[in-house]
Length: 325
Image (cartoon, rainbow, N blue to C red; front, side):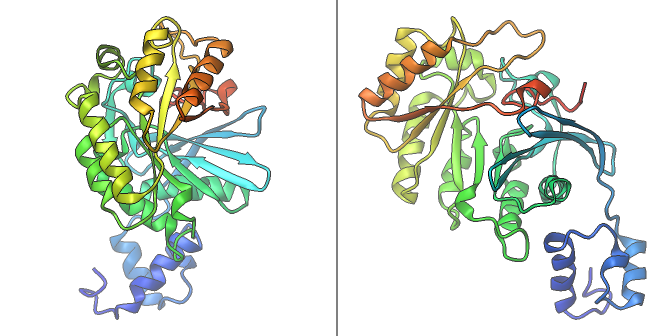
């Protein structure tokens, strides 16, 4: 567009710096652009139309935001401070089409995928509200990032860029339900972004019931794809395992999980299921979660119990649903 307006190439870099690095909220603030160009841009571009509808604050310091984009679409994102760090959990889609049985987001269905700018804007909004630098981003909010691959990668690169937020690639994490072709593609990207895979069961029938959106990708295929990923990248992926009472917390499930993970490069995050109103699922006990960690350690697999953040404001894993109440 700028070339069509007769503008030199360096103007694009100036505009990118204002938007991604300095976080301006209007074209008028781009003071190193000629006034005639600013006026022309205002006629052809929408800008700064993301608004905060609501914000909730957790007792642990986390904040959950409901943001609305120019077309009225809303998403939730979460800021999680810890010591001198600030991590943002951002969404890649409004809603989700994967239909995971225990997830509030999936119950609402998919509205649409987000643009790279809309993903980036969530992080910028949290940064500005806390008034501090973001040190890490996890794309574990609403949506399946690998069902919106191009925008997800573009947003990650902007977050990583020195002209964006300058966040180290290993502090930028993508969480997928396990879309195998995109895992393979992700392994070939040059950046050192981090990968997390929602596993939730290493028993095929259980995983199919919990995660119908990836039923066509068998556990055997996932195992092979993850082996290729670690061989190609040398990076340690994380498997996320939400422990659900009477569903995936049995000795049989644990044995299958140990078999799936042993002798591979991986870390297992045991997640105690968070409350979702109307859900038939209940969390397993802390004692059972510790059993999983111990048994995995016995076969040489590093595992930890994730500390949930923001559960009192429905901001924890599986609780985001495009509205605050």
